[in-house]
Image (cartoon, rainbow, N blue to C red; front, side, top):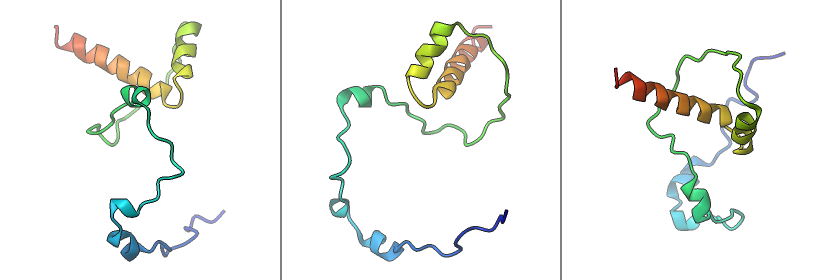
Length: 94
């Protein structure tokens, strides 16, 4: 299998995009974000770009895992964020 990129030249018209304003962007096919969706959004700005991660086997109650999975894509990241918050809270206590 070749490791070469399929195209070395961008076919994007960067000059046209640079000249566009927000009003020029057609958002008609995108649904509006509801207040409920906005309230549950996860802010990821400011996180380090990469952290060393370890793969582990962890036993979690089935209902807890099912709830996290029902939250959608990124449930493992959310579990990690909660564990990190717990760790940091307890590090500052002692």
